Image (cartoon, rainbow, N blue to C red; front, top):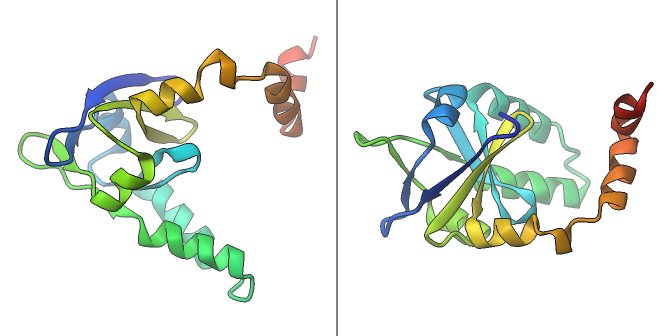
Length: 150
């Protein structure tokens, strides 16, 4: 799903359409949950099952792990499309992401993300991007080495 961005809108009843190309990749069953940075994560059924398995294995005596698992699981919504192909975004998820009217869908790795357009533009603005810091984090995963391997 990586590298795809789509602009859409949330209607007055908190409904929106998932872009057709993303819907094809997500399949007919997908879940929406809270994400980092102020967005929502959209996972296929298989990906959400992996997330749930990971969260089910947290240490019940590590309060921060347990709190994170509870928060994510509590705020997970299995999306259902209506006859017009729209999905409802529950109020708690709308508030988490600060969604207003204009929405940006973006593909990131194995998931899609839903952002409020204004928040996405601020998050990705040049004033908010430090390529040196990004390079440091990429090197943590060996990515920088693969890109620069000659």
